Length: 163
Image (tube, rainbow, N blue to C red; front, side, top):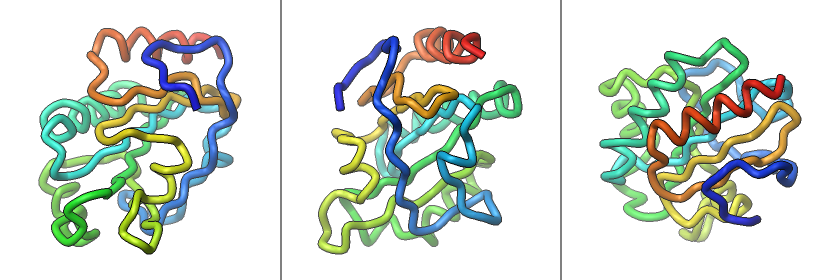
């Protein structure tokens, strides 16, 4: 999968994510459930400084401003280091303390202490990672590191305008 920082005309179909547990949802959430929506997938770790300071608050802001308007924000807690410190019970407290309201899934561990399954499938290099998926379920942006608000807003506006 190509790493890009700007929207592509067409992207590959987004692979389904593999989630061990969901927060802020009563039922599992799949890409098929979100077909017809623009999806902002926010991959993060609770102990990632750029996630905590920039990317996760940005994801919450996008959820508050655009949720229900054809866009869905999905968080993916993808733990590839400090496994003991970032268990689901700690994530639950983090979500509560930071008042995160968007759906957040725990990336399925590989079972061998390696990269979690969705992180590996999407070819993520670390956290934060931002993946934008268009209404047809295609990956249109795949960015490692924090994406500035203005650039993200332009990319989301483009995808939402495609209708």
